[in-house]
Image 1 (cartoon, rainbow, N blue to C red):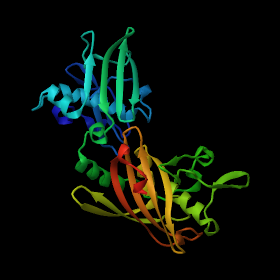
Image 2 (image 1 turned 90 degrees about the horizontal axis):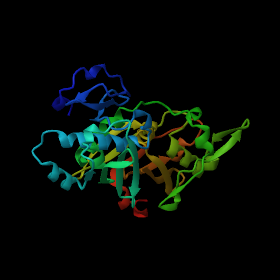
Image 3 (image 1 turned 120 degrees about the vertical axis):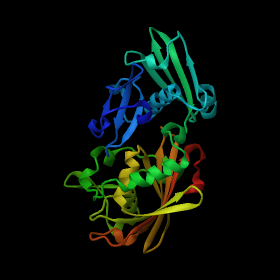
Image 4 (image 1 turned 90 degrees about the vertical axis):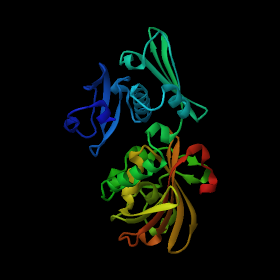
Length: 322
């Protein structure tokens, strides 16, 4: 899209930055880079950056990008593209989406956990309403193959470093836990008090609790290696040699909430499933884990093995995946 819009000097934009200095036919654009310095968003500048929190950003990126794409030359008409993508756009007062700006009111809501409705208001009147499905391929602007390709690239680019216990926030340690699909699948962190401060349990005497803590945080005394198999479209797969903290960091960077449940346990191995739920984009990653019990000790040994099933629509997820 950057080439189509003839945007110059994008290399001067810093990583993790967003600017509205660019225009298309006189209309302001938002252009953003991710932490790795890749262009991750180009769209109309429709919502003030101050409102772009972690929850709203993926949705705003989609809306701004999609409305810009509708105005760009294409082999397909606007009506065909809207019908194909199951998107509805209703404008009033003769105001085009490109003319909506920071001063206009903005609201959004989830409808029946499968659809989003976004609207803008001006002078007490709704000037644009946009309804679209909660579909990761649509919202991220990629088909299944592209999503998987980007996933493999991005997960390998996450910093490969040990997660220290000091990196786990106090809020996470004392936060309220929830379950997902089944009472055995939870985001609960198990803690103990050390010198008056909460700390993660990590010892072989409390194997169940320690494995759950490790699976959800990646925290261990040493950097734990990971043999990751990513299932790909067309019965293909990709083998990656990473560390387990890389996997956890990647999932959290995607805005996922992590839940873990133990399926089976022997003296030497624990098998369980990690569910990474991205509720705003409507998908779930499912990761089948094999964790050697030899990892849960002061000097960990062994390697975690995992099989990664990506971008499953959340409404298709059931306890059968456990």
